[in-house]
Length: 80
Image (cartoon, rainbow, N blue to C red; front, side, top):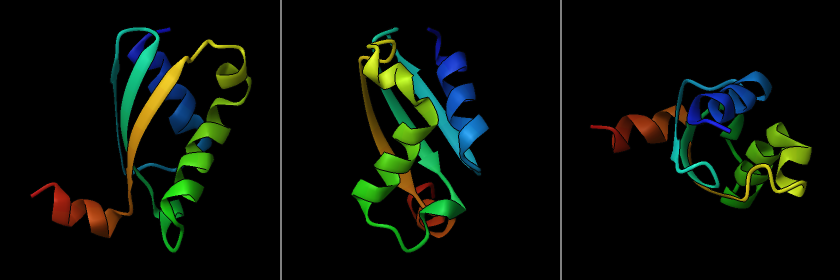
């Protein structure tokens, strides 16, 4: 799997205002910014991203994904 493919899977299941995925084919890191994260705790945000990957997480197609998740307002203050 490529970073572009993984990014596409996430973007197809989650409305993102910013999305960046990097990795080596097995270990990935992502920065995900979505209005869907408003009012959600970090664990719920991560679960929402994992849900976009479905079986890919269970079949080891995506072995590891670390992520930073932000609302658009949080991202505006972090990205400065």
